[in-house]
Length: 325
Ligand code: PMV
Image 1 (cartoon, rainbow, N blue to C red):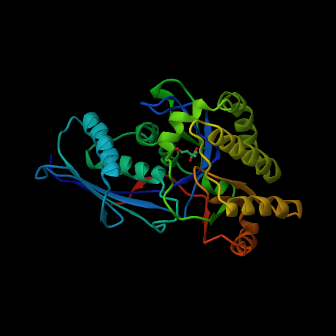
Image 2: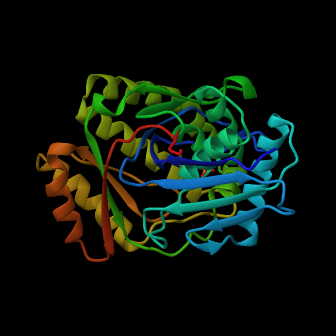
Protein backbone atom coordinates (compact mmCIF):
# COMPACT_ATOMS: atom_id res chain seq x y z
CA UNK A 1 0.00 0.00 0.00
CA UNK A 2 1.18 3.51 -0.71
CA UNK A 3 1.99 5.92 2.10
CA UNK A 4 -1.13 8.05 2.55
CA UNK A 5 -0.60 10.72 5.13
CA UNK A 6 -3.77 11.50 7.12
CA UNK A 7 -4.33 13.95 9.97
CA UNK A 8 -7.28 13.94 12.37
CA UNK A 9 -8.27 16.14 15.26
CA UNK A 10 -10.20 15.08 18.38
CA UNK A 11 -11.27 16.76 21.60
CA UNK A 12 -11.15 15.19 25.05
CA UNK A 13 -14.47 14.88 26.86
CA UNK A 14 -15.54 15.37 30.46
CA UNK A 15 -17.97 12.78 31.79
CA UNK A 16 -21.04 14.19 33.54
CA UNK A 17 -22.14 10.62 34.36
CA UNK A 18 -19.00 8.54 34.89
CA UNK A 19 -17.76 5.31 33.40
CA UNK A 20 -15.88 3.31 36.04
CA UNK A 21 -15.33 -0.44 35.81
CA UNK A 22 -15.83 -2.86 32.94
CA UNK A 23 -18.06 -5.87 32.54
CA UNK A 24 -15.40 -7.07 30.07
CA UNK A 25 -11.90 -5.64 30.48
CA UNK A 26 -10.51 -7.05 27.22
CA UNK A 27 -13.30 -5.57 25.08
CA UNK A 28 -13.72 -2.52 27.35
CA UNK A 29 -17.45 -3.08 27.70
CA UNK A 30 -18.45 -0.76 30.54
CA UNK A 31 -20.20 -1.72 33.76
CA UNK A 32 -22.59 1.21 33.27
CA UNK A 33 -23.70 3.79 30.70
CA UNK A 34 -22.06 7.21 30.78
CA UNK A 35 -22.68 10.69 29.39
CA UNK A 36 -20.15 13.39 28.53
CA UNK A 37 -19.49 16.62 26.71
CA UNK A 38 -16.57 17.23 24.38
CA UNK A 39 -14.17 20.07 25.22
CA UNK A 40 -13.67 22.41 22.26
CA UNK A 41 -10.64 24.29 23.60
CA UNK A 42 -8.57 21.16 24.12
CA UNK A 43 -7.47 19.10 21.14
CA UNK A 44 -5.22 16.29 20.01
CA UNK A 45 -4.00 16.38 16.41
CA UNK A 46 -2.62 13.11 15.06
CA UNK A 47 -1.01 12.26 11.73
CA UNK A 48 -0.74 8.64 10.61
CA UNK A 49 1.10 7.29 7.61
CA UNK A 50 1.29 3.60 6.69
CA UNK A 51 4.47 3.24 4.66
CA UNK A 52 5.89 0.11 3.03
CA UNK A 53 9.47 1.28 3.71
CA UNK A 54 8.98 1.23 7.49
CA UNK A 55 10.09 -1.89 9.35
CA UNK A 56 8.63 -0.80 12.71
CA UNK A 57 5.88 1.49 13.94
CA UNK A 58 7.12 4.91 15.08
CA UNK A 59 5.21 6.89 17.73
CA UNK A 60 5.95 10.53 18.58
CA UNK A 61 3.86 12.38 21.19
CA UNK A 62 4.32 16.11 21.79
CA UNK A 63 7.62 16.10 19.86
CA UNK A 64 9.20 13.31 21.91
CA UNK A 65 9.46 9.59 21.32
CA UNK A 66 6.60 7.85 23.15
CA UNK A 67 7.33 5.92 26.34
CA UNK A 68 7.40 2.12 25.97
CA UNK A 69 3.94 1.69 27.50
CA UNK A 70 2.31 4.43 25.38
CA UNK A 71 3.97 3.02 22.27
CA UNK A 72 2.73 -0.48 23.06
CA UNK A 73 -0.85 0.78 23.50
CA UNK A 74 -0.71 2.69 20.19
CA UNK A 75 0.74 -0.32 18.34
CA UNK A 76 -2.01 -2.56 19.73
CA UNK A 77 -4.55 -0.14 18.30
CA UNK A 78 -2.76 0.10 14.95
CA UNK A 79 -2.94 -3.72 14.87
CA UNK A 80 -6.75 -3.52 15.21
CA UNK A 81 -6.89 -1.10 12.27
CA UNK A 82 -4.48 -3.25 10.22
CA UNK A 83 -6.62 -6.33 10.89
CA UNK A 84 -9.75 -4.50 9.66
CA UNK A 85 -7.95 -3.22 6.56
CA UNK A 86 -6.15 -6.54 5.91
CA UNK A 87 -2.72 -4.91 5.75
CA UNK A 88 0.61 -5.51 7.49
CA UNK A 89 2.25 -2.18 6.71
CA UNK A 90 3.98 -0.36 9.57
CA UNK A 91 3.03 3.20 10.40
CA UNK A 92 4.42 6.46 11.61
CA UNK A 93 2.22 8.21 14.22
CA UNK A 94 2.83 11.83 15.19
CA UNK A 95 0.52 13.25 17.84
CA UNK A 96 0.33 16.67 19.47
CA UNK A 97 -1.86 18.05 22.25
CA UNK A 98 -2.70 21.76 22.39
CA UNK A 99 -3.19 21.52 26.13
CA UNK A 100 0.07 21.89 27.95
CA UNK A 101 1.86 18.69 28.91
CA UNK A 102 1.99 18.15 32.65
CA UNK A 103 -1.47 19.57 33.38
CA UNK A 104 -2.71 16.21 34.56
CA UNK A 105 -5.13 16.24 31.61
CA UNK A 106 -3.12 13.94 29.34
CA UNK A 107 -6.31 12.56 27.93
CA UNK A 108 -6.38 9.11 26.44
CA UNK A 109 -9.87 9.94 25.10
CA UNK A 110 -8.77 12.53 22.53
CA UNK A 111 -5.55 10.61 21.85
CA UNK A 112 -7.29 7.39 20.85
CA UNK A 113 -10.21 9.10 19.10
CA UNK A 114 -7.77 11.04 16.88
CA UNK A 115 -5.61 7.94 16.32
CA UNK A 116 -8.66 5.84 15.35
CA UNK A 117 -9.99 8.40 12.86
CA UNK A 118 -6.57 9.17 11.32
CA UNK A 119 -5.39 5.55 11.13
CA UNK A 120 -8.64 4.26 9.59
CA UNK A 121 -8.59 6.97 6.92
CA UNK A 122 -4.87 6.40 6.26
CA UNK A 123 -5.54 2.67 5.86
CA UNK A 124 -8.27 3.40 3.31
CA UNK A 125 -11.12 2.26 5.59
CA UNK A 126 -14.41 4.11 5.31
CA UNK A 127 -16.15 3.53 8.62
CA UNK A 128 -19.28 5.19 10.00
CA UNK A 129 -19.04 7.41 13.08
CA UNK A 130 -20.64 4.58 15.11
CA UNK A 131 -18.04 2.06 13.89
CA UNK A 132 -15.16 4.49 14.56
CA UNK A 133 -16.50 5.10 18.07
CA UNK A 134 -16.76 1.36 18.71
CA UNK A 135 -13.20 0.86 17.53
CA UNK A 136 -11.84 3.78 19.61
CA UNK A 137 -13.50 2.19 22.68
CA UNK A 138 -11.19 -0.81 22.39
CA UNK A 139 -8.14 1.39 23.11
CA UNK A 140 -9.68 3.61 25.80
CA UNK A 141 -13.31 3.39 26.87
CA UNK A 142 -13.88 7.13 27.11
CA UNK A 143 -12.35 7.62 23.62
CA UNK A 144 -15.61 6.31 22.14
CA UNK A 145 -17.34 9.42 23.51
CA UNK A 146 -14.85 11.75 21.74
CA UNK A 147 -15.67 10.43 18.26
CA UNK A 148 -19.18 11.91 17.92
CA UNK A 149 -19.71 15.61 18.75
CA UNK A 150 -21.37 17.60 21.52
CA UNK A 151 -23.18 15.81 24.36
CA UNK A 152 -22.56 12.08 23.99
CA UNK A 153 -24.17 9.03 25.58
CA UNK A 154 -22.27 5.74 25.70
CA UNK A 155 -24.90 3.11 26.28
CA UNK A 156 -23.93 0.17 28.43
CA UNK A 157 -24.49 -2.90 26.36
CA UNK A 158 -23.05 -6.34 26.84
CA UNK A 159 -21.82 -6.96 23.31
CA UNK A 160 -19.25 -5.16 21.18
CA UNK A 161 -21.70 -4.28 18.40
CA UNK A 162 -23.86 -1.82 20.31
CA UNK A 163 -21.25 -0.33 22.68
CA UNK A 164 -20.36 3.10 21.29
CA UNK A 165 -21.00 6.80 21.80
CA UNK A 166 -23.95 8.61 20.26
CA UNK A 167 -24.67 12.35 20.19
CA UNK A 168 -27.79 13.25 22.19
CA UNK A 169 -27.43 17.00 21.57
CA UNK A 170 -25.08 19.07 19.39
CA UNK A 171 -22.56 21.52 20.94
CA UNK A 172 -24.80 24.56 20.31
CA UNK A 173 -27.75 22.95 22.10
CA UNK A 174 -26.54 24.38 25.42
CA UNK A 175 -23.53 26.65 25.84
CA UNK A 176 -21.97 25.12 28.94
CA UNK A 177 -18.35 25.78 29.90
CA UNK A 178 -15.86 23.65 31.77
CA UNK A 179 -13.60 25.79 33.97
CA UNK A 180 -10.83 23.35 34.87
CA UNK A 181 -9.01 24.01 38.14
CA UNK A 182 -5.60 22.35 37.87
CA UNK A 183 -4.39 21.69 41.39
CA UNK A 184 -1.66 19.20 40.54
CA UNK A 185 0.13 18.65 37.25
CA UNK A 186 1.96 15.43 38.09
CA UNK A 187 1.07 12.26 36.20
CA UNK A 188 -1.46 10.17 38.08
CA UNK A 189 -0.13 7.31 40.18
CA UNK A 190 -2.81 4.82 39.07
CA UNK A 191 -4.18 5.11 35.56
CA UNK A 192 -7.79 4.40 34.66
CA UNK A 193 -7.07 1.03 33.01
CA UNK A 194 -5.81 -0.31 36.36
CA UNK A 195 -8.62 1.54 38.16
CA UNK A 196 -11.37 -0.07 36.07
CA UNK A 197 -9.87 -3.49 36.80
CA UNK A 198 -10.19 -3.06 40.59
CA UNK A 199 -13.56 -1.22 40.66
CA UNK A 200 -15.34 -4.46 41.54
CA UNK A 201 -13.29 -4.84 44.74
CA UNK A 202 -15.23 -1.94 46.28
CA UNK A 203 -18.42 -2.99 48.10
CA UNK A 204 -19.94 0.24 46.77
CA UNK A 205 -19.46 -0.50 43.07
CA UNK A 206 -22.55 -2.72 42.76
CA UNK A 207 -24.70 -0.03 44.35
CA UNK A 208 -23.17 2.67 42.13
CA UNK A 209 -23.74 0.65 38.97
CA UNK A 210 -27.31 -0.26 40.00
CA UNK A 211 -28.17 3.39 40.65
CA UNK A 212 -26.53 4.83 37.52
CA UNK A 213 -29.52 4.44 35.15
CA UNK A 214 -31.59 6.81 37.33
CA UNK A 215 -28.81 9.43 37.40
CA UNK A 216 -28.18 9.03 33.68
CA UNK A 217 -31.85 9.65 32.92
CA UNK A 218 -31.93 12.73 35.18
CA UNK A 219 -28.76 14.03 33.54
CA UNK A 220 -30.03 13.42 30.02
CA UNK A 221 -33.34 15.14 30.85
CA UNK A 222 -31.50 18.09 32.47
CA UNK A 223 -29.35 18.55 29.36
CA UNK A 224 -32.28 18.30 26.96
CA UNK A 225 -34.28 20.80 29.09
CA UNK A 226 -31.21 23.01 29.77
CA UNK A 227 -32.07 22.74 33.48
CA UNK A 228 -28.89 23.75 35.32
CA UNK A 229 -30.04 23.16 38.94
CA UNK A 230 -31.05 19.59 38.04
CA UNK A 231 -27.76 19.05 36.19
CA UNK A 232 -25.73 20.40 39.11
CA UNK A 233 -27.25 17.99 41.63
CA UNK A 234 -26.91 14.89 39.50
CA UNK A 235 -23.35 15.42 38.22
CA UNK A 236 -21.97 16.11 41.69
CA UNK A 237 -23.73 13.05 43.08
CA UNK A 238 -22.41 10.89 40.27
CA UNK A 239 -18.80 12.10 40.58
CA UNK A 240 -18.90 11.52 44.33
CA UNK A 241 -20.33 8.01 43.84
CA UNK A 242 -17.39 7.19 41.55
CA UNK A 243 -14.84 8.60 43.99
CA UNK A 244 -16.48 6.67 46.85
CA UNK A 245 -15.87 3.50 44.82
CA UNK A 246 -12.28 4.54 44.09
CA UNK A 247 -11.55 5.29 47.74
CA UNK A 248 -13.00 1.97 48.92
CA UNK A 249 -11.49 -0.31 46.28
CA UNK A 250 -8.52 -2.58 46.98
CA UNK A 251 -6.01 -1.03 46.70
CA UNK A 252 -7.68 2.24 47.64
CA UNK A 253 -7.44 5.10 45.13
CA UNK A 254 -7.48 8.50 46.80
CA UNK A 255 -7.00 11.10 44.06
CA UNK A 256 -8.01 14.24 45.97
CA UNK A 257 -5.54 16.84 47.22
CA UNK A 258 -6.43 19.50 49.82
CA UNK A 259 -7.01 22.01 46.99
CA UNK A 260 -9.42 19.55 45.31
CA UNK A 261 -11.65 19.71 48.37
CA UNK A 262 -11.19 23.48 48.66
CA UNK A 263 -12.55 23.96 45.13
CA UNK A 264 -15.44 21.53 45.74
CA UNK A 265 -16.46 23.36 48.93
CA UNK A 266 -16.16 26.74 47.21
CA UNK A 267 -18.32 25.60 44.28
CA UNK A 268 -21.05 24.50 46.70
CA UNK A 269 -20.88 27.81 48.56
CA UNK A 270 -21.03 29.84 45.32
CA UNK A 271 -24.06 27.82 44.20
CA UNK A 272 -25.80 28.48 47.52
CA UNK A 273 -25.13 32.17 46.86
CA UNK A 274 -26.88 31.91 43.49
CA UNK A 275 -24.02 31.31 41.04
CA UNK A 276 -24.77 28.53 38.51
CA UNK A 277 -21.79 26.16 38.85
CA UNK A 278 -21.23 22.50 39.77
CA UNK A 279 -18.17 20.28 40.06
CA UNK A 280 -17.12 16.97 38.60
CA UNK A 281 -13.78 15.16 38.98
CA UNK A 282 -12.14 12.44 36.89
CA UNK A 283 -9.45 9.96 37.96
CA UNK A 284 -7.20 12.70 39.29
CA UNK A 285 -7.14 15.70 41.62
CA UNK A 286 -8.22 18.45 39.20
CA UNK A 287 -11.74 19.88 39.49
CA UNK A 288 -13.95 20.54 36.47
CA UNK A 289 -16.33 23.39 37.28
CA UNK A 290 -19.27 23.10 34.90
CA UNK A 291 -21.30 26.27 34.38
CA UNK A 292 -23.43 28.08 31.81
CA UNK A 293 -21.32 30.34 29.53
CA UNK A 294 -22.81 33.43 31.27
CA UNK A 295 -21.23 32.42 34.62
CA UNK A 296 -17.92 31.32 33.13
CA UNK A 297 -15.87 34.54 33.54
CA UNK A 298 -16.93 34.92 37.18
CA UNK A 299 -16.30 31.24 37.95
CA UNK A 300 -12.85 31.49 36.34
CA UNK A 301 -11.94 34.55 38.41
CA UNK A 302 -13.13 32.95 41.65
CA UNK A 303 -11.37 29.64 40.93
CA UNK A 304 -8.06 31.38 40.17
CA UNK A 305 -8.15 33.00 43.61
CA UNK A 306 -8.28 29.68 45.51
CA UNK A 307 -4.91 28.82 47.10
CA UNK A 308 -3.48 25.64 45.57
CA UNK A 309 -5.01 26.19 42.12
CA UNK A 310 -1.97 26.19 39.82
CA UNK A 311 -3.71 27.11 36.59
CA UNK A 312 -7.12 27.31 35.01
CA UNK A 313 -8.29 26.23 31.54
CA UNK A 314 -11.71 27.14 30.15
CA UNK A 315 -13.55 25.29 27.40
CA UNK A 316 -16.89 25.39 25.62
CA UNK A 317 -18.60 22.24 24.25
CA UNK A 318 -16.81 20.75 21.27
CA UNK A 319 -17.59 18.84 18.10
CA UNK A 320 -16.59 15.35 17.06
CA UNK A 321 -13.37 13.87 15.71
CA UNK A 322 -12.65 14.46 12.04
CA UNK A 323 -10.02 14.22 9.35
CA UNK A 324 -8.41 17.57 8.62
CA UNK A 325 -5.88 16.72 5.91
O1 PMV B 1 -11.35 5.78 29.21
P1 PMV B 1 -10.57 5.59 30.45
O2 PMV B 1 -10.13 4.18 30.65
O3 PMV B 1 -9.43 6.58 30.55
O4 PMV B 1 -11.56 5.87 31.70
C1 PMV B 1 -12.12 7.12 32.00
C2 PMV B 1 -12.56 7.14 33.40
C3 PMV B 1 -13.03 8.49 33.93
O5 PMV B 1 -12.43 9.55 33.25
C4 PMV B 1 -12.67 8.59 35.41
C5 PMV B 1 -14.56 8.62 33.85
C6 PMV B 1 -15.12 8.84 32.47
O6 PMV B 1 -16.25 8.39 32.25
O7 PMV B 1 -14.49 9.50 31.64
